[in-house]
Length: 229
Image 1: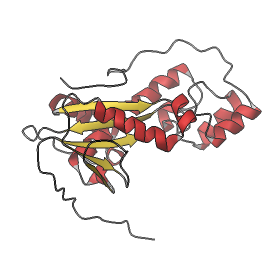
Image 2: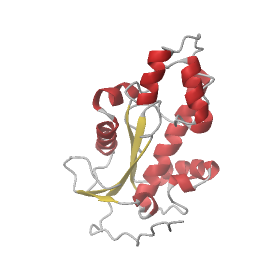
Image 3: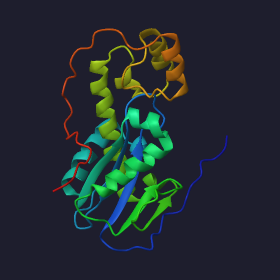
């Protein structure tokens, strides 16, 4: 078995107070938006336990979500909806969603670190950080905000479109999701440019059951941009 790559601690040339970390969640799912977050942490109000959101329990992520939104200097969510993804592809949609998150910060960053190997083409000084969600606290914070946000959206979407198992697998192409897609059809929230969804649309068509009104059980604003005070 290959050993996991262990990268050294990241050293950033920028040492000021207005460093933004950016991360995304939701590139792989078949349904819903790709969600991004940008966070500028407050050095005077450190947050213990920040880490890659995927390595934290749901309970811990939710607790850190509250701490980040309360203590960060600034934070903002950006997104691209399924219909935008279908128009411009998931890669470009992710880049746009990241730019929306940074542009929506109530405090302008002086430098931006982006999880991954590429930054969007924007005007902020920035650099990508491989595995940044486990090496840079601001990126870890962004990954937590983005994941908690999207996970909550999938739970709410399960109420609107029951039978797909969205609350459990969060929209990824699991066997349960695939079976439901080819049995129940394609919902308006599915990404129709993704091949499995295209195939289901051709074979089954759109979701035909009556849909109850969505239950508004989300505990955060749902505007395009979300800012701290």
